[in-house]
Length: 116
Image (cartoon, rainbow, N blue to C red; front, top):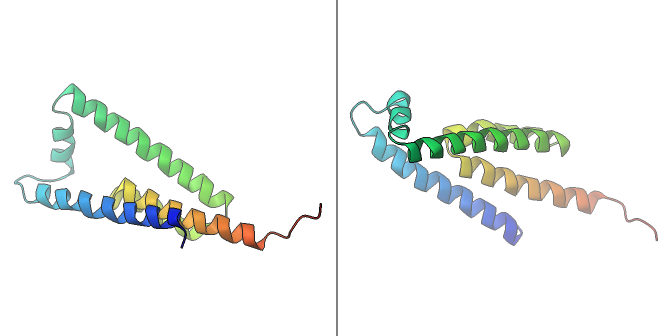
């Protein structure tokens, strides 16, 4: 495993654990749920901007992950698209980047040497 792959993997795990720590804290509140979560994200202009920006990032990252997975023939890694929503964006993207690095390395080692 390369240093880059290790960094991606560690950050993916940190994002999932850290995010779910706070998700579990939130879920212990009365009336916790998606509707209440969105309502809380819209309490002021700063929070609304953050929600809009995060939503755009989710869409863009997931589109890139799908196109990149298809381009590199990484079809099995598409399971990470829903993981960005149901676990965390950092988790899904971090694992995707780890798998992408492995795929690129495998392609480089499988490519025949070009004669000069």
